Length: 286
Image (tube, rainbow, N blue to C red; front, side, top):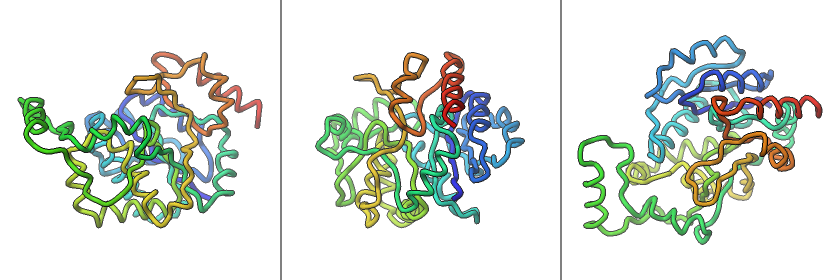
């Protein structure tokens, strides 16, 4: 079964190179979306690796902006439309790294062809208590003009709370941005964004849409019974923090014992020993 790994990146091309080299496999192809704000020339050396190509429709990705979700969905559509048949579409960041061998990853998905894997929490969870502001209030994250924050504050003082434009129960979570979905789910998501024009307009003024829109679409779809609430990723969000922890050697035991397939996030400018340790562990268990 072939797997398309879609990788969203904006920095550390040599760290991405290590990820790509580690995941070389006959059934893996890699599609790299480089943030349009970033000079792509520093990444061009990566095309010398087997199965690597760039997403052509590059978008600017602003942290928390709808632009990030747009880049993810646009990249997914581009891969769906390129003529290659994949059983799964695996969304990674350039700061992810596998915790299992490539063969283990392949075998797992071959055994679960009708499943999709994404993390989510329902509307009544603790995460949602603060997350509702992501769509109830106006956010101008993707806009850049003088006085932006003043305008944003005024909009939220004057206008009523916004309501989600579709009759859906909402799902999401701090770990929901990264997922592995099968072809049927990928096609459903792509078609949803093509046909539901009103949600695209609504999401332009939301914040952190990558953490709740895709799970909401899939869990409200006819495919919901084949959606597994597990994105197969080890991610450590310290309490009260908006960003995940940069993982180090002190986290190795927790990562390995988690039985997850991938972990994030790593930064080789801070620590490379942890990636060496993971490689050592995988080599010992092949």
